[in-house]
Structure formats: C-alpha cells, structure tokens
Image (cartoon, rainbow, N blue to C red; front, side, top):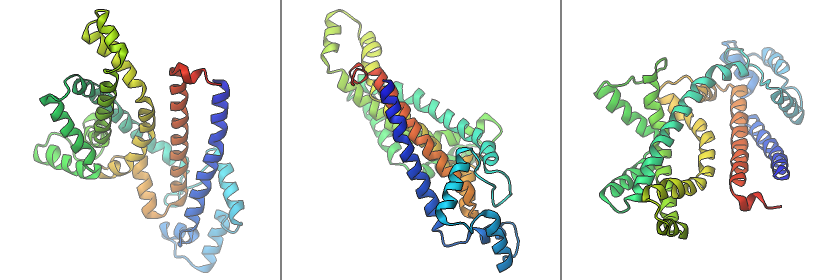
Length: 310
C-alpha cells in the first residue's frame, strides 16, 4: 500500500507540471499585452515608455521559459503575484473569497448525500412502482436541465413569484439555499440513478439469497449488506464530485451574486487579470489531481483484492 501511494504521488508531479505549463502558455498566447492591460485597468494611459516600464516591473522582458520557472517557483511558495485590478496579493484575494465557495459547495454536498441516497435506495426497493417511475422522470429532467437555466427558473419561481427566498447576495443562510439547490441538482440526479442501479445489481447477488435463507429481515439485508456494497462503487464518483462542485460554482456564483472564488475568476477574465486567472487554474488542477489520488487510495484500502496486489 505504501509503495502504491508513493508511486501515485510521483505520477502527480508531471501531471501538475504539464497543467501549469499549458495554462501559462495559453495565457501568454493571448493577443493583449499584459503590461498594457495592467496600465488600462489602473486607468493609466498606456504610452511606449509606461508600457516598457510596466513590462520591466512585471518581468515580461525575460524569455518565456525563464518567466514560467520564476512563476512556478513563486507559485510553489503560494506567491501568485499581485492583481492587476486592485494591486492586492492574489493569494489574499482568493483567501477572502474561498470561505464563501467552500460554504456553498459544502451545503450542496450535504444536499446531494441527504437526498440522493434515500431516494436511490427507495427507487431500487420499489422498482417499477409509481414512485420509481416518478423518481426516474425527475432524474431525467434533473440531468437534462442546464444549471444556469435552473438557477434563473428558481429565482423567478421561489424569489420573485412567491417571495420565499432572496434573489442574490450573502449574509444569511437563506441566501445560500437557491445557489446550493442549483449547484447540487444535477449531481443529485446522477447519484440517484447510480445508487439505484448499484442497488438493483447487488440485490441479484447470491449473498442476498443466502441472507434471506438465514432468516435476516429485508430491511437488514438492504441497509447492512446491499446498501454498503452499493456505496463502495460510488466512492470514485463522489470523490471526483468535490472538485467538480467547486469548479461548478463559477456559473452559479455569478447568477446569484455569491461572493466566492468562481465570481472572482469570472471578474478576472473580463478584466484580463492574468495573475488571478493563472492562480485559479492551478488551484483547480491541484484539487482535481489530489482528490483523484485520495479516492484511488480509499478505494484500494476498502477493497481487499486491490489492497493485497503487489
């Protein structure tokens, strides 16, 4: 197990190097001159002299590979430079917005687990019933509905028409309900279908028939055996949903004016704040890679056959 973890950790290094290099390369291929952008967002009239001075200040006079390695070494020390817009440290800007994003993703994750597991189990237990057909219809609609369209629909329905919840902003728990529902809906639909299918597959296994012959109650078989085995195969998808939830907040936070990292990223894109964009891309890449690594380790630890492989 230790050898496997060390091998996977070593494999993440070239992946992160590749992602960081591609993101740095693509942003450097943008036609706009970062020095001119930095001057314009600070309302300074760009002249050849001021552009040259800004390029020298930003280190843009160095060769591309040298600039990349300087940026990479600084990023490894969590030094992403300064924002072009407000001249603040990029790390401070991300740290200011990150708690709101984590809160939104956390509430959405709780909704996913609290709704998808019981509905998936009940849909499998009462297969082909009216309840099962209703759940499958809602799952189809949930996976087919774009998040931005669902968000606008919820604003019109729950906020404007019925005045139950605020349309945007933050500060109270009521503000987080609409964006959390919008963010979690597609994942709830996916996990209901996944858990239902896994439950139906496990209910046909021989250990279920053996448990019935031993006199175990149907409730005990479902909750203690079938559900446990069904959730094992969902760990990979659940682990990868965490970075997807954080990345998916980009659209949701802008719809509901939620002050998180996703909204900061969109604002940086429109203002061409390259240091913030680079830091966001690298942060999401690290999150995806290490969540994938953690899920693989947990899955191998829970599966005896994989754990004993050499």
